[in-house]
Length: 282
Length: 282
Image (cartoon, rainbow over all chains, first blue to last red; front, side, top):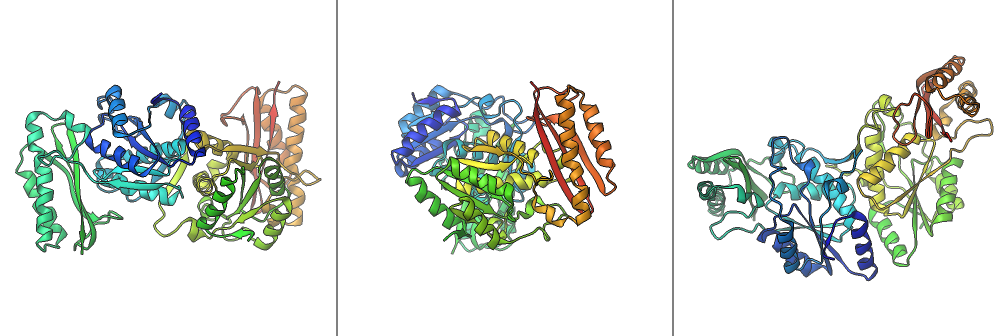
């Protein structure tokens, strides 16, 4: 049995594996898997004996008017793909299994969730930390794998794990991109052909910003302005934010130093895309 | 080494015990142990191979103007008492160990925390669920023991455990009372002799209410009114609340049925005492 739907069942499976001394890796996803997810699964399989992929479109991390209903779901395809990438089990609980009647507990990391995506998606990270805490408690993995495309999510989850003393190693993995630079996302499927073409401005701007920095630019505002102006050359692009921040605590910075995260969110039509680049200033 | 102060150290000890197949019991306390706590420790020792008692006066569960600073602390005595009751280790972390600089994550159970003690102690249960979640993650016990004197706390923690899929059994233990009926509490030490004598009205009223119910009374309002009027005969008593609720979800009830909790909080001078009685209507 590759797809497991209940907490009880997956717990029994994991306990058995752990009794045999196996290391457990978890790859939490919302499904509609792409090469980015598969890279996480492969990495998890390299570093652990038993890999659980969870596929759960988590209602509590979607705001009103967001795409919870329309978020693409294709379990059979996800099942085949994750199996071929090395997953040992796919955990696919129902919403009622995860949030039964009378459910009322939430995990919230404050402050770093007020920035970047937290501004236009209030409550989003509260849903993320809650569901990830639950998945961590259900699967009790040694390591969990997250894509660096959701850079803020990685920072938030690391803080939750540290703050709540969860004994789990968080492994961020690099963004996987299409050949033309577009960061892989399950939401790319929403894009029209024209929007898809316009969206290339995101990675292009980030790569050019990286060049500027490699050529010595250290002024955060100049880099931000360059990216904003560059994106604005695309009439279909509607900027949500472009920020240059400290990669560890997401605080604004003026002068680039240490690990720097350049993160952005831009809408093309109804589709909100995010992308980022992380640069170590030496 | 009986007293352990760091997360790292206790984790190593627990992992070693678990590798040997031992069952772990946790008794979370704020210290200044009395016979109530010791009954939890003894019960934990009966049901588990290795018992951890935590002693941590948790700042996040005290409101402004409450007794965080003055809460009695006496570690050496706690250490001896818990050891004699069967504890294998006492975990006594510093505030900085539990809430290091930049700490920002909280666990909150909603709705059932708005009632009873939640009304006059806003934020109290958020502090409780947060610290208990942390202790559960640090110690990773099979079972955790809580006194039924904090009846709402037991309900809240059970809900948190259920909601967040924590794989831990919560064991509530009966209230331990002085011979004259006063429920044991570390806060009893605050009472003047006169207040101590007045405070007996709490258990007396609860026991009389129990008699009423055993004699057939099923009207929640009548029971509540009886208790309120009875307590008001003590001039030093200042009622915070007296409630007759469903023991499982803390919802108000009109007609007694199933498991009923009669809970109260009353101030004597600056000291706020709680007490309760749980009755199964058959």
